[in-house]
Image 1 (cartoon, rainbow, N blue to C red):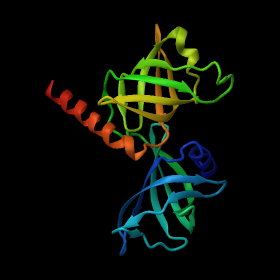
Image 2 (cartoon, rainbow, N blue to C red; image 1 turned 45 degrees about the vertical axis):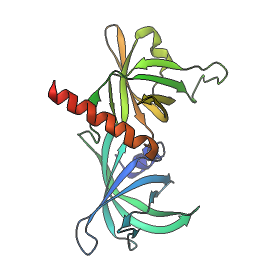
Image 3 (spheres, helix red, strand yellow; image 1 turned 120 degrees about the vertical axis):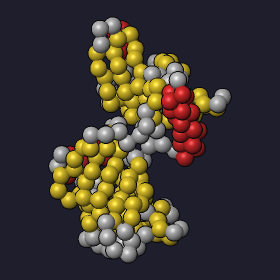
Length: 223
């Protein structure tokens, strides 16, 4: 996709994890970051760190950037434009260079599960807050990037594509609330297969969910 389409897509992915790669020189390495803001031409990233300090950067230097969006991994070259501090958060603003391409592999390990999951619609066409209520499903698979589940055909109307939901997960008797978006909706003979991509993963939920995924993965290997 061209840079305009890439930027438009990232506007819906604030909080998504990013990896920045420097191939050569004194600061060669891979640095984690997050999408913090997007405007018409630039991507605002959490300024990466090196040994506890902000990574030194220079204007117009090109980096390799990969970002998870909608359950897929996208790659783009980016050029450093500027750095600034906003509300005590150091930001690194970069400009996409050329086209972004989708990498055909999963960014996150996905494991089967039977987690009871609550979904509460947040917004969208036909959305009426006073009429919305929690819908509960049994997730079929889960990763740090999202969940997959199926619903009977008559309930598919409750999950329009691109609709945003509050997602409730219960792990080790603790309740976690995340925000996600419907990114997959596939009809089957008697049901619909749906996929929700999380809009970022807060630190307080990442560790318990990661532990659950590793436990499921280990159990699958032993069975």
